Length: 65
Length: 483
Image 1 (tube, chains in turn yellow, purple):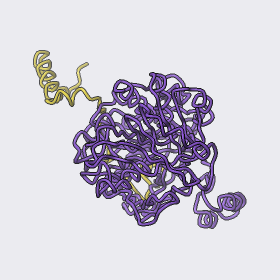
Image 2: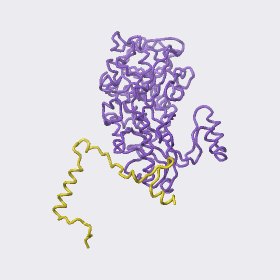
Image 3: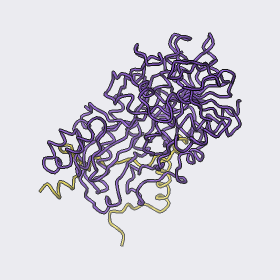
Image 4: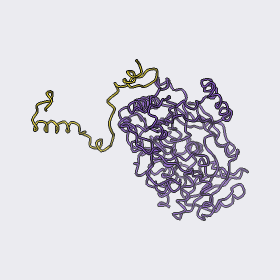
């Protein structure tokens, strides 16, 4: 059963969109692309520093009571 | 053969060697053996003898004027085999990122690539008795991290060059290894562009000239610079110092306690300690240097230097009775403190340097002053690495880390060191930014070369010996082709 919130795009339009996203993701500098740099953290907001302790937000839920 | 220069000095008078090497440590011995194997005649001069002596070691004394550093005669050994006589044997290779441009650097990096530096890696492994490649992490399982990888290394037994190579040095008829033979002057022509001899002195005051077609300095990062600077009778600022770079960019690996940690996944830590290296992406994102962050649960404290025995004796019962008091008294930590240690790359900083003082040693050479300087970019690397490791420990849910206040606030006042002396005659294609060229030949001098970690333009985050042996073999290959 289809999800009611799913976008109603045709298969062709979905393929075109995926192609465009791929083009955006490819770096222009080919030498930079050749270097395996790896991923960057995107989750900084998930951590808090309290009195020097670097904790996860869910640590506070678990232990902070 | 091995010749004691204290009793036999005449031999130098009627000989011209293909190559004269000053310094009988890992670099000098590796070059001598490789050149002899290629059929070249070699004179290897070593200031010390076949064992430690106060008379030789005293030449290493110097003063300190910058950031606190250990005594200069306490971190290296001046007799045949050099500092390999007391090294621990940890070996590894520079990372590919260490050879790439970095935005936190002041000066250009390596003028040669990683493949070229490690062209003789296989032979270096044999010399240092290392297992077959690749270098590996100490843990059998991979780290479940996208932003850090495990530090890869191997342990040499450790190879003691004196014990391993003494017989070969004695038996090889192409090598004359002079012990108790102190280099006291580099003789050069009037323009300073050609070396015409090494003046060598024994402990009885007798001095002779050693002649060769090409000359190598392999005395260690502090002494290589010291010898060039002392040659100011030919050139006012010393040999090879037209751009004022000799002695500059002294680098260490910074050993800073980043904080402490509690483990949250006992199974993970049962497999042993962890050394973290940042990913290329993390280093590029933050513009930081390389480094190793080490976590060892329940680490045993180590004591060095004066009163080490007393401090260790106090710490045993002291840590059980009153840990806070014991930490203050011993200046160290207690078992179970779970401290986070580090080995951080220091950028090449011209303000961090060795220079001559007015005081002279027993051979008339001026002693040096080490002005060790920590750049603000080094402090930034330390703080950012600590934060990123702390986040990653929490992300992987294997530990939680408390970062030391002075690290968080970038107010670090004291730095431990690894006794890894690097820089001071750095390699650079452009003479304005270095002392030796890509072949390790001193800029502007046609027959003088420098070997050892003093030629490193950057220090990376790995112990320097394996790389300096590999580069010494590369230099020997070049010299053998010329001779």
